Image (cartoon, rainbow, N blue to C red; front, side):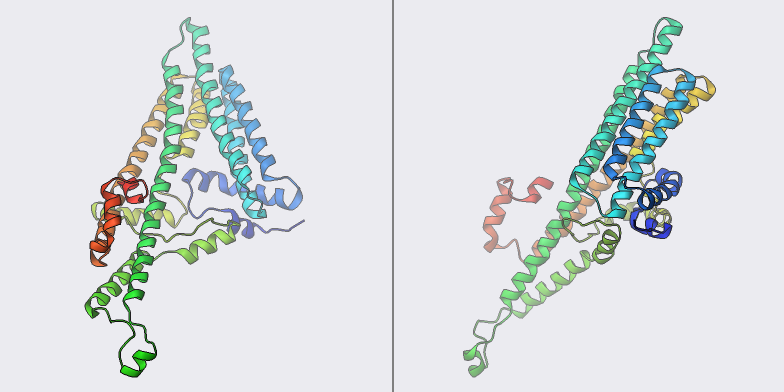
Length: 372
């Protein structure tokens, strides 16, 4: 069996940036557990995913019973479930056993666990209150629906934001390739006739137009100055094989101009591997399924579940709105850059009438139409 050291496990499994809950409260335990499992057992990542799912179902059973000691036990089981959920991915990266099916299992089990646990937690509190008071507060039902909605919203939003950003990066990379191709056609080619007469075999393009193209290519390359090598190195070290590597495009100029303090905030958190999205899906889950039931169990106040869940939901929604706002500013930067490139590199001239026509007609063949 392989003998992984703790430093190797950290280097190959820890994400470049993660949620503060994971970085400070889960990773220190998870990396040691991963090392133990990888060095001493033949357990697979998919098996850990199944264990995480059953621990989550056990937490749901405890939550459904509703009483204080069951809430505390459910909290413990949910924490263990989340630990296993973090461990399976790390084990897959460490051993190079990542798979599409494993990714599907992890995603589906996460969503199923959240759905079952929120129904069990809120339903259990409703039943307990009904037994004690003869009438359960209906806001527990609305709270369960709100949690499911917010969990769905943040997943859909994350997927769409990633898709749009990737499409913008792809468009700018394609613009660079078109600029290089155009310049190569404009530059003169020498043949035998040209050697004899001192002129190129093809009429030399206007020097000013070539200069504009070269300048445009330089601007594009600067915009598309990326962390490709570092990204690829991190992915190889972590055992990841990216399907497609696209340049990292800086499309946050307007956001930084409006919020100059953000870069310092980002740098301070990035140095600690913490992402700026301080209240995301993980923090929301921990608030609802760990902090809230534990507080209700300790203080004997079921209403704390409602208050803590509501506060966590508002914070999650605020951060999701901030992401959408930042994406909107990025799209403004994107179209500013693309329009400038098309103008400077003469891509929108009469020779490109077909492309202009496809934009005007709203064809689905152009990603700009999709992005707008």
